[in-house]
Length: 389
Figure 1 (tube, rainbow, N blue to C red):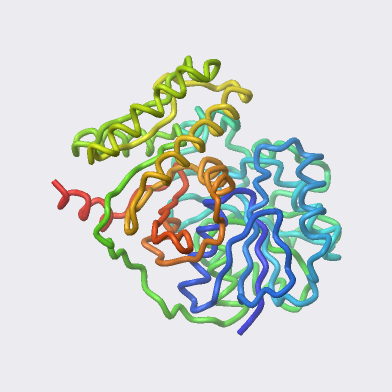
Figure 2: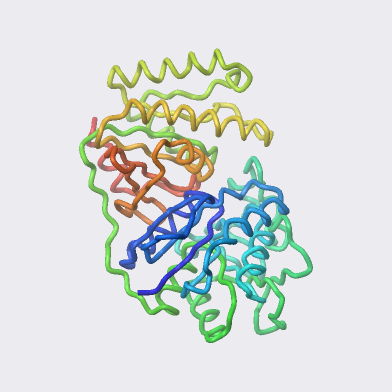
């Protein structure tokens, strides 16, 4: 079986790619930027560098540091996972991988046609709607105010080319072709067959590489087996989809605990809020924890919110019992929560749906189910929750 290395900039992206590799029968290990390669036995290593919100130069340096002690020659495929709507210091991270691995060309195909996300004539669409007219316009850190891919990549330079790879000398270029459908991936893979380049992008491109370059077949199906414990939710995203999740949970009898805005500046208020959550759990209530109800876009406040949600998650996990499940929406929220765990050895237990992965905290029997904030929960999750009431 092939050896694969994936560098992802957030945890839900890492978990999503790990889920795909799992479905293709590969053994998977999802790790953070402090990963050491010695003694690793898994066929697929996915590193969450937690770098999406870093300035470009810091992101570049972090990627180089992460890869410095990794023998890249031992991998059959190196893949740079990027956000499907190309948020973050995309070009800087790709240049860092290129500089370490010796590539001189990178192909970025971030869009996921399987989810209605496409690039047509250099413009980004979601279900046929220009991205600037969707919920992503209100992203607190990377508002998608333009439909042009070249404007969406915040650290774009003259090395970036958006268009047909056939129409340009690809050497020393970072190329973003159109992604109209799944045939777009196959065409690029065929075009670059035998060439040394860095593939970068989303879940659909990675799946196509496994199928069409490594010639693997999917051998595991998506599933969801509820072990019988309680379910809790942590909503770190403010996407419209996360708002729909909250509405559903409220209507399904969950008690909601929104992080008080004043707790961002007051440890006393935050501690009192944690006590309320603890009391609800001990009284066997169904609980969800969420960001402040008001929209906060200040980056410094966002950092504080994520850290406080991670502390709340630690409180929640410490009061959980074996077979309990914690559902987490939001990549950076999930990443921060997992970094705060006493035991970060996580294995993939199940792939519930594309982008929705169930991981087990070793020796605790507690499960984390993570997904990007903009993705929907699968119908089998929703249906099983309905049966709880």
